[in-house]
Image (tube, rainbow, N blue to C red):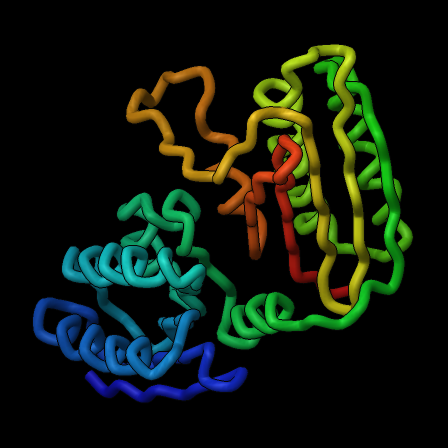
Amino acid sequence: MKIDLEHRFDARVCVVRMDGDLDMGSVPRVRHRISEALSGGCVNVVLDMSRVDYADSSTFSLLVWLDRELDPRGGKLVLAGANANVGRVLELSGLIGAAPTIAAADDVTVALSGLDSMEDLSAPVWVEHMVLPATPDTLASARGQVCDVLEPVGIAESTMFDIRVAVGEALANAIRHGSPGGEDDVVSVEVSMFANRVMIRVSDSGNGFDGCSIPSEDLYASSGRGVMFMRALMDKVEFESCVDGGTVVTLVKHITT
């Protein structure tokens, strides 16, 4: 296998371009090259899978290792450009979307755009604020209000659906777990529009939550997957426990209009 590394965004992002088969023979070499990049300060990794025609179970060990390496760094792994056959193998791992650091993208350009949006510290174009009663019957209208605010931007329908689901999960958690006063509490939503991304912050008044939610191993469990959905659908998800109580969930989605 041929392996080339390219550093982006002041070496914080490493693009690993692979040409050949991912198997027991090549995975250790890929891991070694990535390990060197991580030692040099890289915190986000894009695996260019566009020229990988074969991937076996050895690939899973690479993904698990990368997840464990990147999670403490607050980094992300993006699998870019996998063909249909390799994509099916990657899906079998169950890690894409479920593991907090691992996501997929159509190609390297899309992957880098999402990571670039996380590094961008520019000011928002506009900000909208909402305050909602902490009751389950407000969920539908709250999701609708967020989408109504974003509608003039012209966000793609599939991207808007991802945002709607992620915001819905954040709101549901804020109402269910972050509102000890029940209907007397409120949930705050802040929508910030940037040139290349939308950021949504959902705040509650509960006891604080760090986002370390472990999905239930029970396939038929009735709850416990909200954080997993948020991480799978958004480009960045952060949880912050406030000093005076409550949790702020920050959801970031890169957009193209």
